[in-house]
Length: 356
Image (tube, rainbow, N blue to C red; front, side, top):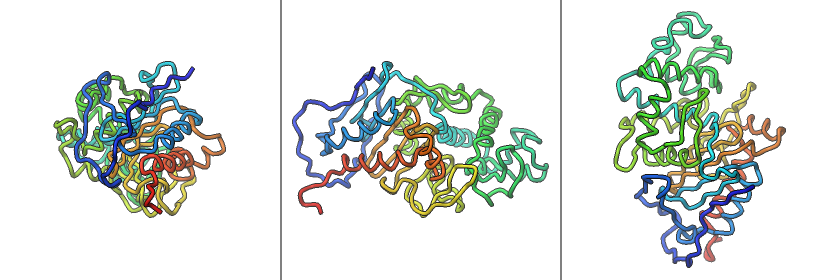
C-alpha cells in the first residue's frame, strides 16, 4: 500500500518574474503539523513534471517519507507507508548533526566548553589511551572526528592529525552530555530542542533519534534560520553555530561539527580504509548545501541559497554493491544523492526559453 501526500494543487500557474537566484529573507515556521502552510510548485515557477521525476526516484529507491520545504512551507510531500506522515523511524547518523546542536546549547548554558578534555566528564580511563594521551582529546576533537582513536578507542594518532569517521567515539558524546547537563539525552533534547521547535514525534534512542519526516524538516528549518525558531533564538552562540556548519579542520574540508558540507575541494571516505576523493560531496548539488547523513539513506539537506530543506527517510536506496561504493565516496548514499540533486535542481531551476 502506498500513501500519497504530495502537494500538487489544482491552481492556475502564476507568473514568475523574479530571478531564480532570488531567495526570500522571510521564513515561515509552523505552529503545529496540522496547520502547516503549503505552497504550490507552480507558484514558485518550478517544473512540476520534473518534480514528479524526483518523487518517482525516491519511491523506486526504497523511500518511505519525502518532504520538501521552501521558505519553511511544504511544497512537496509523499509517503510510501500506511502510516503516512506519522511514519517515524531511526534516523541513524543524522542524529550526529542533532547531537552537535545539543552540544552547542550545553556550551551556551555554561555546562561545558568544547575545548575541555572529554575525561572531565567521562572520567579517566574512558578510552584505552594513556592518561596523558587521553587528556589531549577534547570534546571538539570528537565533534570533528579527529580524536586520533580507532573504533576500539585505542590511541593511533595525536588529536587533529588524522580524520577518521568514528561512530564509537562519537557515541561517547551522549554520556558526556548527560553528565554535563545533569539530565538524560531525552530530557535535555525535549527541553532545549524538541519542545521549542514543535518536534513532538521525536525521541532519543540507541545513540540517535527516532523521528518523523516533518520533525526532521523542523530541525532542518531551524538550521536554515541560523538557530532561530519563529523569533526565538534557540541557539544564541553564533560563533559555535557558524563553526558547526563550516569546515572544522583541514584534513576533511567537507566536514564541520558532525555535519557534512558540499562544495569543498575534497572529501574523505567514511569506511575503514579512509581515502581522499577530489571534488564536492554531491557534485550535482549547489555548493552551499549542508546535510545530516544517516546509514540507509536517511537525510536532512539544508540549502540556504534556495531556502530549501529536503528530507528523505526509508530503507537503503541502493544495492549492497552500490552501498559499499557509496561508503567509499565520503558520505551516506553517494550515488542516490547525486541522482536526487540532479533531478531536483532541474525541477527547482527549470530551463527558460532564453536560457542556453
